[in-house]
Length: 462
Figure (tube, rainbow, N blue to C red):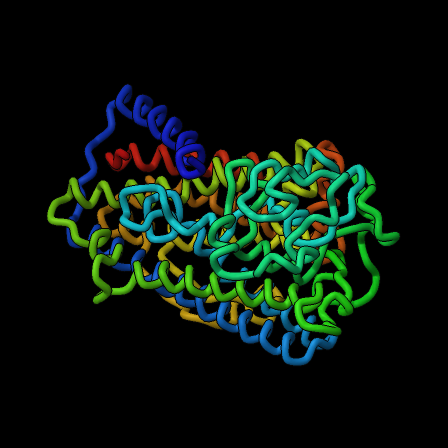
């Protein structure tokens, strides 16, 4: 359902571009099957590289959580938070491989039944997991868990009148892989229990203002903290939340929840990685790279272009930026607990750039904005292919639009690093602070349209 809704806008623009190209006299492009195969092989190499980095950083996150369990002190809590932030760096870039029935979105590469929702779903059902504070920025309209498959509150809705009903505060509920798997995601998107953002909530807690209130809508700059921490503007869950005094108390259960959810995250990512590996039975890589004709290769090119076009327009510009900006909704900000949304945006943009140019520079383990770790790859991209078949000019508009979205993402990232996180940027959609968000949304839509036009210009149809 999610995959269809995101792909539809790009598919429509692809159709419009097709009509425009068909209405004008365009010289046919002479494709080269061997060079098309080279693009596919390089793309698959990048898929394995970025997902392998994603898996490895998730394992490091699991290790950090184990150390927090063994010694619940402030240093280990901060280390676990840093490990989560680092784990997001390769994952964000991997999202450019979505929306094409690859291993993240499909188990059999035909149906939309993949693990993406278990891995990265949001908004989170935090009120179903642990205690929350309500206010004008987080009320019934935001926490209203109306459909869940847990014993919490007798399976009934969670509202402001039943906030004590949650998994952590109900000792009789055993926190197991089955519990998490059974309610990983939901149609109402309020009982998500699994994935990165469940871990994020448990490590940071809600992003409240300095007085501990959730009355921050329209004045969220009050939530900007002044003391030094990895993400000083995010949630400030206290260390005492993890210091257990007896078995199965709330602190013990929080650590158990972290362990179970992180174990599932690692297992899910391993499944995705296996789909990109040669030699694994039924792997996606072989299906994707095995083409016997130019027409078959064109279909694979269409999948690549649809993936990055859909991420740009339907997902990033629409779901992840426009909704939060239009509604001044912190809950609709992707990484709302850690205030890491600026990196979510930047990394998605970088992933799109990676796909087009065929290069992956690894990930940022130092959190200074520069890639310094992982499986860097200098590959053969779409730009290289266009050059080799004598059609580089056809990619110039795409490349100009890529530069625009990079410029916008860089501005958002810089503002957040200087103390204006995304939840502050979105308080007034027409303000100067929101301009980088507005400009980047527009640029992403233009970039998606330019990809659709390129696809038609080189006779790639989905």
